[in-house]
Amino acid sequence: MSVPTVLVHRDTEVLAQAVAARLITRLVDTQAARGSAHLVLTGGTIGIATLAALAGTAAHDAIDWHALDIWWGDERFLPTGHPERNETGAREALLDRVDVDPSRIHPMPSTDAGLTAEEAAEAYAAELAKAARPEDHGPVPSFDVLLLGMGPDGHVASLFPGQPGVYEEERPVVAVHGSPKPPPTRISLTFPALRAAREVWIVAAGEEKAQAVHLALSGAGPFQVPAAGARGRQGTLFLLDRAAAAKIPPSLGRIASP
Image (cartoon, rainbow, N blue to C red):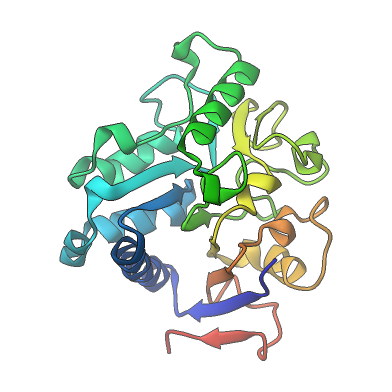
């Protein structure tokens, strides 16, 4: 797994804008090299703010939206259109505002699909497997950028400390029950799927994340601090605002926004 690079931005607004700009560059470069790209979205305040910042800049037109597959790292198992679903937030902030190919948007199943959470996880795993190519050497595509938020407890996607999902080493997608953060039932990618990504970007803002950031970058175990186990094959970025970076050694982070 790659060694993380830490970039610190002045505040939450600058962080969202910087991540959006970096994402445009990365996707454009990837599409120029390979013709298409795979992007995994996250929810949460900073995740949705990043998507809104992306939609708000004219530079997003540089992305070939018809050559971009969009996935999610986790989802709340709720009805389609529910305001707490990550898909709903992503559509409102970005996807409904760009010329994306609907067939290349891959939301996790909702409760109105008539599936149990376990069946929904299996269905999403099957969709990922269908998109995987021989060169991916696994049951999921080699995501070009996988965005993750991080909770104050160090969770990423819906992999919570000490819960069964963090120990899963075979299945790429699991159902999550009894989530300590509501709603209790969710669907999540697992570490094997996260680590299939070429690049993992962990985006965190706010002083309540500072201790978890410190632990994730200080050798903590992934079972206790899941963010410590989310690493890309080619690169891992911790993209932080100053408040979230407050407890890491100054030598570890590079100031990106004065």
